[in-house]
Length: 127
Image (cartoon, rainbow, N blue to C red; front, side, top):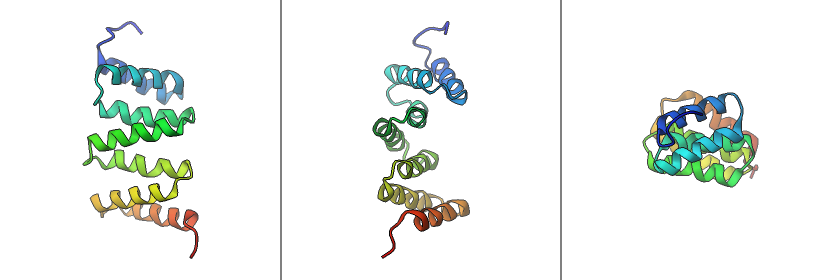
């Protein structure tokens, strides 16, 4: 890409395009470049986490999603991403905790209640 290396938003947008095209390896590389120049870029951290899923890098995906959520705790989308990803990696307890945090932030999200119910019905062991 012909751009100044320090043009963070251009790198970030390029990463978004690559991710949308499912070119996860290159998207991850662009988001990592953004984070080098701007370590608290929550969009890059969040998208790095979701792109890392595409290359099945569980630990780093969850770390990146968690960092984005920690930097913007009021952003329920980041928290929701953190809630939905652990179940994909068989970390049910963490997923359920984060689903419940999302619901505390936005109790009017009926779809999230439905998803939590579906999640519990499918993954929580019966007692």
